[in-house]
Length: 402
Image (cartoon, rainbow, N blue to C red; front, side, top):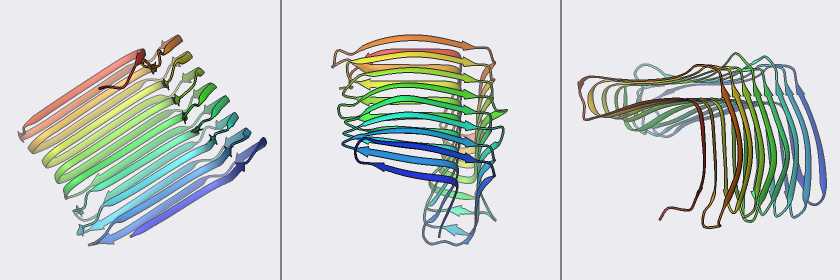
C-alpha cells in the first residue's frame, strides 16, 4: 500500500534558456497541513508513505546561459505534516515512510551557465512540525523499515555543473521547529532505521565540473526551540537504529574546479535538543545516536582556492541525549554529540590548494551531551560515547585517501 500527500501554500517553477531574470515574491498567511493515516493488516508487499507539506516553494534552472533569480518568501502560518501507521500482524515487505515539512523552500541550478541568486526567506513565530507514529497491536516488520521525519523552517539549495554560483542568501526564522518519530513494534528480523531531523535554517550549494562559488550567507534562528526526537522500540530486533539530529543554522557548500569565496554569518537564540532512544528486549545490533548543534558551517573545495570569512554566535542551549535499554543480545552502540558553534573548511592538496580563513565564534549557552546504555541480561559489545564542545574550528588541505 502506498499513500502520497502534498500540500503547498504557494509554488513557482522557472526554467531559463539564456540571459533570464526571475522575480519571485511569495506570502503565505494561513496554515499548511498534510496528514496520512494507514491501517494495514498482514501486508505481503511494501507499505510506503510520502507525506510532504510546504509553505512557499520556488525552483529555477538555467542551461548554457545565465539566470538572475531574485526571491522573497514569507511564511506567517503554521506548517505541519503528520503520518500515522497502524499495523496488524506481519508486514512482509519493507516499511518506507517519509514525512517532511518545509516552511520556505528554494532550489536553483545552473548547467554550463551562470546563476546569480538574491534570496530572502522569513518564517514568523509559528510552528513547523513533522511527526510519524508507527504502532498497532504487536506489529511485526518482517521486511524491515526505513522511516525519516524532517522539519525545516527555511531551505535554500543551489548547485549545478560547469557553473558559476554567486549572490546572497538571507534566512530568518522565528519558528519553533520539531521532528518526532515514534515506533512501537514486536518483531523486526531485518534492518530498521528511524530518523528525525529538525533544522531552523538550511543553506546548501553543490557545484562540480569546473565551477566556482562566491556567496554571502546570513542565517538567524530565534524561535523557542529546535527539537528532534526518535524513539525506536521492539520486543525483538535484529538491527535497530534510532537517530536524531537538531540544528539551528546549517550551511554546507561543496565545489569542484574553481575558487570558492564565502562569507557566513550565523546567529542562534533557540534551545536545541536532540534525543535518540532505542529499546529492545532481545537484540542483535542496536544503535542510538543524537546530535545537537547551534551553528554549523562546512565548506569544501576540490581545487586550489578557498576563502572563508565565518562569524557564529550561539546563545541557545544545546543538548544531545542518546540511550539504549535491552535485556539479552549482542552489540549496542550509543553516541551523543553537542556543539555550540562549528566550522570546517578544506581544499585539495593535489591541486596545491590554499585556504584563507577568518573565524569568529562566540558561545554563551550551556552545551551538554548525555549517553546511557543499559543491558540487564547479557551482551557482547557495549560502546558508549558523549562529546560536548562550545566552539570548534577545523581547516585543512587534504587529498583523496589511498
